[in-house]
Amino acid sequence: MHNKFKEDKSRMKIVVNTRFLIKNKLEGMGVFTAETFRRISRNHPDHQFIFLFDRAFDQEFIFSENVKGIVLHPPARHPFLWYIWFEWSVRKFLNRSKADLFISCDGYLPLKSKTKSLTVIHDLAFEHYPKDIPILVRLYYRHFFPKFAKKADRIASVSEFSKKDICEWYSIKPDKIDVVYNGASDHFKPIPEESRIENRNMYADGKEYYIYVGALHQRKNIVHLLKAYEQFRSKSDHDAKLLIVGRKAWGTSEMIQTYEDMLHKSDVIFTGRLSDEELAAVLASALALVYISYFEGFGIPLIEAMHCDVPVITSNTSSLPEVAGNAGILVDPFDVDEIGEAMKKIAENDTFRNDLIEKSRIQRSKFSWAKTAELMWEAILKTQ
Image (cartoon, rainbow, N blue to C red; front, top):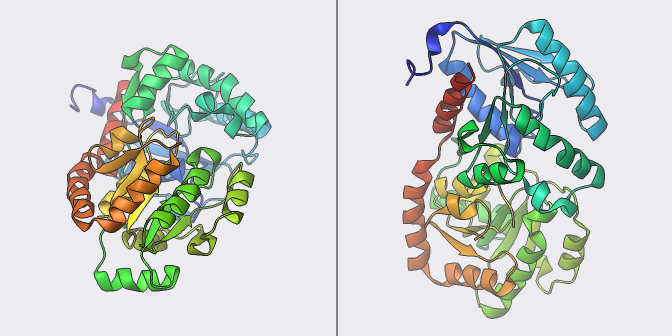
């Protein structure tokens, strides 16, 4: 494999967009960047990596001696600032540094740069559900992402579903896109029963609980999750609670109203964001993960739950069947009765639940950050 891609031809200078590496605030793209480039930089010490941040960064993200962190201004957290950061700050830096390759883990690229590029496009949710995001962000995405996809020398994506979606929306040839998948961090693993009891006491008054993990965003389908939980409680004698773990994002007014109207709202617990260690412990103590987003490029919490020996209820849409395989219950994310019935079946049928866990141990072996790093490195070598 290495000879095929001529890995040892020279020492490469690889510049990476790492603006989502923010201490204690890693989500999907930040987790992908951290887990992948921690491994890549350490596995390939002969190459130089320059990480570009848009604000002061923590040294924990300088993973090895061949990594250097650089801050470019302005902080890029708004469509106008995105444009300035990539088209001015990043482009000028790439020209000045004489980089061999620019890698962007969030899909964005400096369109006027002549440096070779590899971009990671995780999903095209904004094309399918444009009204779920603020209008200025929507306009930016829909205008620039087709250009980013065409500009890139190569594209990486995190599922076969997303690869196909990018090809269809942006008329990209399939052989330009490498599927690299996602993984689960090492702290997601099963824990002893006494620890599970301790966590249930801490978060759910000693009761068993279902869990959702992720930002409280419109497409994460929290409204239908709350309604399905109501259905489950009305049709079952089981008193499992519902933990919702994550930060508030866009479009939560309907979710708040749905929650206020619930009969069992006292059994729904919003924890907010948890640390990685807290999240791993809380997830490993759950009865099941209910992750019924109506659109995902991958769905990392599914693999995290599987690594914790926690069964999964997820949607039968987008990439989620590809990730869940036969190890999860697939439901229509818009069918409240179907979701509620899946929750009821897991709560009341231990044999069924344990069978899902056994299947998940096989399915989870298909995905790991080590594999992601290997596949990303192959994609990097294909650009040279």
